Image (cartoon, rainbow, N blue to C red; front, side, top):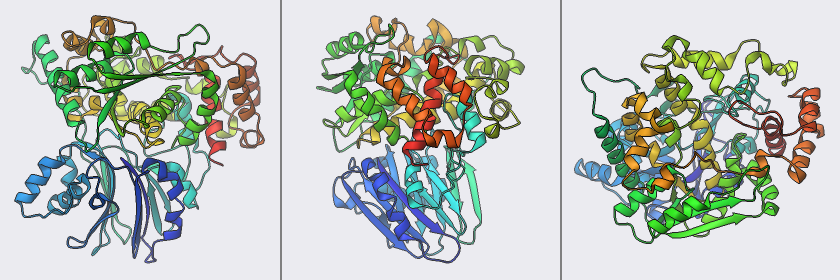
Length: 592
């Protein structure tokens, strides 16, 4: 887990090493252990390292293989790097480290851009061929690791964070109206390749982009789960449960690959509890687990310690729980916003930020239960799709999930920022209309797995943990597990109030009290129910000169929201005032 940046020139000039150096302060938190630079002709690279695999200097980056004529910057972890190393050694390759970074270099030389199909892990990397000047960019299947891009005349810049590209200079920081429509439709989700800024894009997940020095480029998508079932291949319900458990066992085991200890973020929900149970089953002793809680507000409890304590006791973990006072919440909001590569409205961000701050004092790597709800249909908007005709799927999905209709956008967004077409619905229609995904629920799960999951919970975990140099691994997003879950019949996923097949598979491992409890979230009541100094902060941001000049939102609508700050909610319960305030706060904190 690291941070990197760089510049590729396509106009015959040398790369601007000074511009790349300006990215460094925005990447340092992601890799606090060491840093390095490399530049030659049209390419300059910068890397900040978090030491997880091969802690020696041999694993440092940028990694340059003079013999093969390749240079690489990489963020993430290749969990099957040991197996790939053995295969490459059998083909005659010599290794000078035990790092997964060097495995990527040799694998690319051996198999070319299709090497990504052999990787099991989370990754974003940029690789440069010295002789040809060809540059290859790639991102993992589920977009767990980020890769942001900024194209300007004659050059392409890349970085692990959006603020690093802004710091390098020359970026068009105008708000993208189409991205704004997406943000206001899907509670801050902006699908790749767009970001909220017109001058910054992101490489989509499961994508390899090849850039030639003469400006030619090609791009390929190397993975997509089918969400279809083959006739005659049906399995008994009990066998599906066993397959889920076996796939998750393998995923959890893979994510213990490290040269440092690995802990677990234990929320007290089923997903993280099952990870702990499987690690205990495999013989892990003294596993470090971590939970966080907040003060109550608006009649809503701020912690789930009852359940996390139960799991910690049953599996005899070395448990740490952090009770956060309200006095820490406001400063953490400011810091968490600065840590966001893109504005993210979920109050979970602050919880993950504060939890990561505490956990990073003890650990470098943790596993997290993120992704299970999208993969196994655990959210409230999935059951309404169960019996919807496939032709009506978009309407049903929009009613259950969209924050507001295209027509209602004009009630909140200023006229100059509105777009004529309902671009968010059109995006969903294109996605739902692609081949595969047999039922309405299959189509929704495919969309959420490839889009919403990537640019909400996955991005949230990456940004908030890496702000403290903490690597978070997500076994529910193991691509083999996701493929298997995509084939699972929808009725099994929707059973028992959602995630039915996962709950059934967990019965012999996890306490029933955890499985049968009401669905919980990472609660931060002080943000869900705005009041006091938090409300004042949101008001100050929305009434600041920068906000008045930008005029993203109608002033009369903002006045109404501030007058009754907790009245207006989105269909899934989000606070509308927080949604608009968070965006403006992020833009101001980025200096935009």
